[in-house]
Length: 45
Image (cartoon, rainbow, N blue to C red):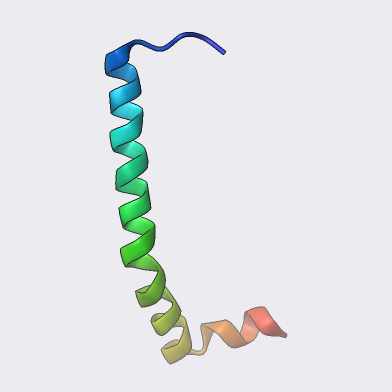
């Protein structure tokens, strides 16, 4: 694995934190949406 500069590590950490935030705040609305539109039924069959 190549060595990363301190700045590159900080960018990756920032990107990772943003991804975690998006997953946390996006997961429940997606589940609720699938429940409302019946999208989850096709997955379970």
